[in-house]
Amino acid sequence: MTLLSTLESILFVASKPLTIVQLAKALDTTKEHIADALETLILKYNHDDSGIHILREIDTVQMATNPAHADVIEGFVKHDVSGELPKAQLETLTVIAYRSPITRADLEQIRGVNCAIILRNLMMRGLVEQYDSSDDILPTYVLTMDALSALGIADTSHLPQYDILSIHDNITYALTGNETEL
Image (cartoon, rainbow, N blue to C red; front, side):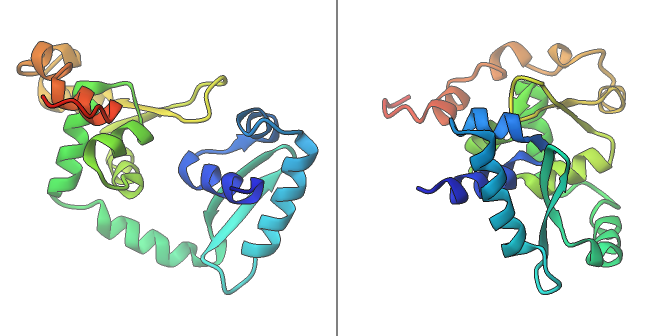
């Protein structure tokens, strides 16, 4: 496992801008090593034939789509967030409702699939909010006030069987990877 591949993975899952200091701390290396690795990733991705680009502004960096594809992406996103919620979005929204605040990594561990696009769509619909912590690399996700209002509840503890489902053994099992049988 190289610094370059690890940095690339973190930028992919972070879904938010990160500082070089945060990356150096997370990867237990120097800011200089991170800066060098970022330059390599920029050379790898930032060209016309790549759908991915590394965005960098002073000491902040983020992996994003190629800015030249903005119109196509905007059209895709508009189409993707209109209409009824697909089953995958409903499932994700339910997990967030019962387990918030929750990181994308924990959400993906529970659901067993990548949730990046689903989270993006739920945020664009105004149902889920992302909270960033200055101490943590990974943001957490919670329901928005609009989502609570649409559900007719004041907070998630008013969800049906919240006391049971929010701490259900199957969720704990999925998060810990515990090998003991439930």
